[in-house]
Image (cartoon, rainbow, N blue to C red; front, side, top):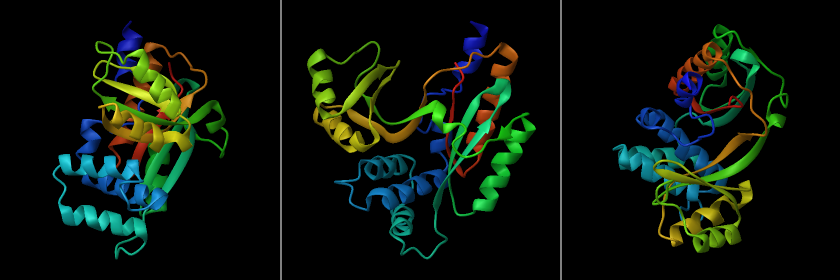
Length: 241
């Protein structure tokens, strides 16, 4: 139980930005920019952008700052352009790590992530050496459904019709998993069922997991916390159980 308790704080299967990371305007701005680059600036067809803007507004980001982030995504912003990076690494206990970044400085992101991984006794891996251990999926996180207030069978069937492959309830929210190309359809279906979409993102879900002892679990938790504190880091995934 002690091992589970120490490791629980990492929330290894969750891609949604937590309260600490959501407070960073840099992260929120980058999230908006990348969403625009992927699917365009129209929130009626870009659910990730819609959710990102809503999160930015809740964090009291100004309208001008949001508009600059959108402009960056369309390529007309005057500031440096943002790009998405993905690093694959091995962490404490031989765990696999995927670190996703959004940054205006590739060198800074690489150096910062590599420094923390190396300091924790880990190492960078070759491209593809880690990602094959994971499935790349879409995840829509909604409020209005949870362990104590589960979705009805009828609602789940409607979500499945929209492309949902799994529904995972948590204490306060529920994750709806799907193929990456069904993310928008599933998010729209969830909204039509009266749920509030808190996040709509692509995630890496481990196919199998590695069990860690207390010591290695604490080391990994510390590494993930430090990585997530970097403004350039948007998500960290691992196959630890």
